[in-house]
Length: 266
Ligand SMILES: Nc1ncnc2c1ncn2[C@@H]1O[C@H](COP(=O)(O)OP(=O)(O)OP(=O)(O)O)[C@@H](O)[C@H]1O
Image (tube, protein in one colour):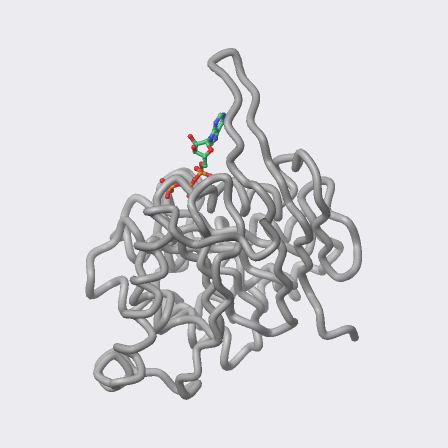
C-alpha cells in the first residue's frame, strides 16, 4: 500500500456571494502519511474549516487537487469519518448510544453480527460499554463526544477528520479525550487529521503540526513534533522540549496574525 494517504495540492477556495468575494484559502499544499496524526492550527478565520470541508468533499475547491488514497476527492469519500465540535447536533436524540454508533454501518454490506461486534468494540475503546442503552441526552457533553468518536471508530475509516472536537468540553474532560485520541492513534494505527485552536493541544497530540497563515491561507510551517510517542498530560507538558515547541508554534501564529511571514514562492 502506498505510504501517502492524503494529498492536498495547490488548494484554493474563493467564496463568492452577494456580499462580495472572500479568498479564504490562497494556496495550500501538504501530504499526510498513512497512520499519521497531524494537527492543523492557525489564526481565527484563516480557513481551517473551509480546508476540512474541501478535504471531506463537502465543498468544491476553486482550484487545486485533493487525493485520498490516490483517488481525487469530488464528493464525501466513504472511507472518511468526521467528528465536529457540536456533538449535540451530530447525535440523534431518539436513538440509543448503540444505535447512534451503529448507524453508518447500516449502509454497509456487513452482517448483523459483525456490525454488533464492531459497535461493542468501539464502545469499549471509548469507555462507554456501560452506556450502550442510554440516550445521548442522558449523557454529559464529554460522554456525547465519546459516542461521536465511537461511531467513527466502529466505521473503521481510512482517515478520521476532527474539527475542534473538544472546544466545547471542560478542561478535565478535554484532557481525557485527548488521551483517547492518542490511544486510538497508537493502538489502532488510525490516521487522524485534527484541527484545533489550542496550541498546547496541537503539540501534545500531533506527530506534526501544520501552521496556517492568515487568509488567503498557505502553509506557513510544517513542524515535526519530536516528542516521544508515549505522552502523558503531566510529564509531557512539563518537558522543556514541549515548552520550546509550544512557544515556537505560538510565535508562528502571532507572525501569521500580523501577516509577517512571507510565502516562499511569493
Ligand atoms: N459560506 C461562506 N461564504 C462566504 N465566506 C465564507 C463562508 N464560509 C467561510 N467564509 C469566510 O472564509 C474565511 C475562512 O473561514 P473558516 O470558517 O474556514 O475559518 P476558520 O479558520 O475555520 O475560522 P475559526 O478559526 O473562526 O473557526 C473567513 O473569512 C470566513 O468569513
